[in-house]
Image (cartoon, rainbow, N blue to C red; front, side, top):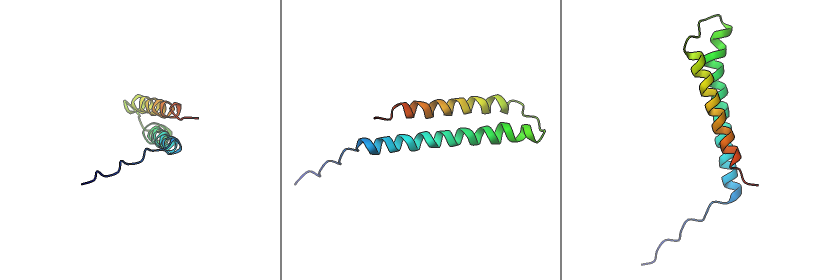
Length: 75
């Protein structure tokens, strides 16, 4: 019996596109979370409470992930 051929390695352009897509997703999630948890209640006059600091911390964390991923993009 013959062994199946190994899967071709993913190219640099494909890796960069995957990284950019992941960074874009993290960015979109961070902005969505900040608007829905923090900004929308604040503008409607409702109490934010503990959700405010959590939303800001999540925003910062997801932005850090996005920047980390984009830093790995190859030239």
